[in-house]
Length: 273
Ligand SMILES: O=C(O)c1cc(=O)[nH]c(=O)n1[C@@H]1O[C@H](COP(=O)(O)O)[C@@H](O)[C@H]1O
Image 1 (tube, rainbow, N blue to C red):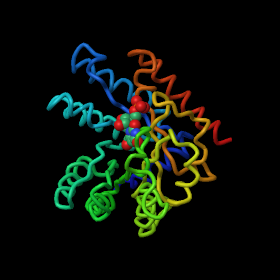
Image 2: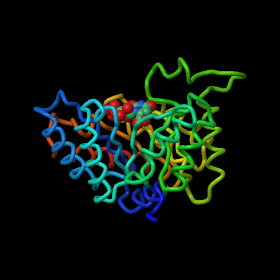
Image 3: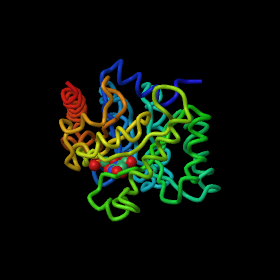
Image 4: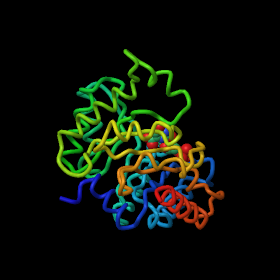
């Protein structure tokens, strides 16, 4: 079997010295047509791969194009695999267990074996099980939403019973699942927005063996220099994700996307000095 997702990310971080996750969220409004969108997205993937520890297509942008979009998504995933890039399928799936099983089968097995999936814990911790099991059995990963990057996350994720936030309760479950596994990092990771830099050391400590996925770099205002608290001492344990800030760094200029990815990589590395 290929290297499991968390180990593949960590190995790439060490060999290429990068902690950047390139988000590929192509917006049809930026293009002449779907063929143009496809080519630009594949070009950005190839141009930024040397600076990326992982790539994260957000499924919404492909679903928005219907069947053609799903074909483009599959091509993006196949191209990433050829480049040796771990893939995070950002779908934020979650449902009752029997339906979660079908989602897990669709996105974590077969041609997507070895990929990671973002999952939503709102329906309860037992509903995470099908995703966790499929990830473990197929060398993949899951990233559970713990504290999302948007300002209104506190409506539901903030203070809960007895002074413990919902985010902290989910983090405790991620830590519990991680403790069931061997290896440096577990297959169960967590999403914590890069827009909450002050909280990063706390969540890092709560989930010692989880890979953290930090979206929000660039377009949502998070700065690489504020994010050191998400990493372990050796500079591993987290991926910082930027989508618009890379793909549309300067309109559709692919060279500018490449430069943006290189600069984000360098800024993240500088933050860890
Ligand atoms: O799971 C995610 O990646 C995610 C979680 C979160 O809390 N916030 C968040 O923005 N995201 C995703 O990260 C990407 C952010 O895009 P940019 O703001 O363009 O960098 C989008 O694909 C979002 O759906």
